[in-house]
Length: 263
Image (cartoon, rainbow, N blue to C red; front, side, top):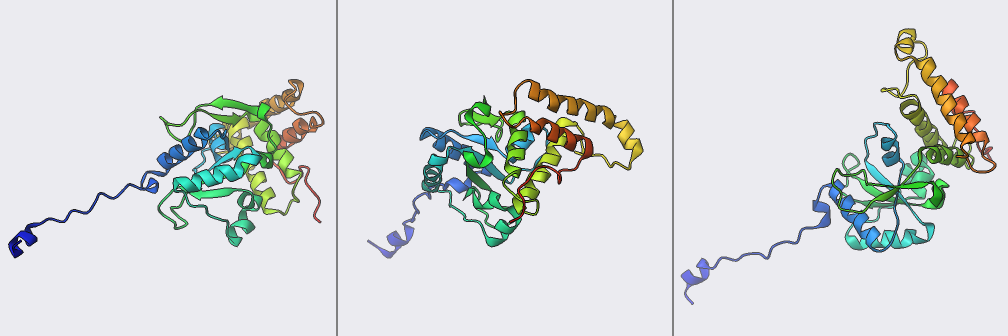
């Protein structure tokens, strides 16, 4: 074969397979959820996904789901096999997020690894949220307008509040996990129970307070959470939750809620 013939040969590289992380984070998440459902793992939306369903304008960076405790290792292995790297928490993340960092199994769903752009799918054991199967409803997923995965489970609104109050009993008021629970509860009360577009109104701003008719909103919200006890929403022995939640609605203070004493 002549030199000219050799030079005329065009070397074509074989097409490179498209890695899963080359998709958008939402589509990577959709593929991951579908894989978990295919192997029989039920998924429960949690944290920011639920907050957003309840009216909190949450910007979701990490997507959190509960799975049965015994299936957490299987779920994490399935995600790793799919090509989603497991990312252990750093000491800094543990100091800021407490058990939300420790108990979660995070898998990266983005090519980017820098702190500004990286996103994760986080799997938590269901017992961490203290939620029972009877407190879930089957709903369409909320991560995409047209998801490919099957419907997922979602906690009812009363169950979300009860879960937060129940989790608070496990931590002292200075624990990082407690601070996050307090913040979440405040946002849910402002956006979900009071229906305030900004989540809160400055108590010293009389004009805004009157314009938003905050006193009526508080009265309606207090009635709602207290009537939940009548409808047997709270578990046996947890009837105190209605009064405790009503007090937070009235005062805006979460620091007086029951908690574990410091060791």
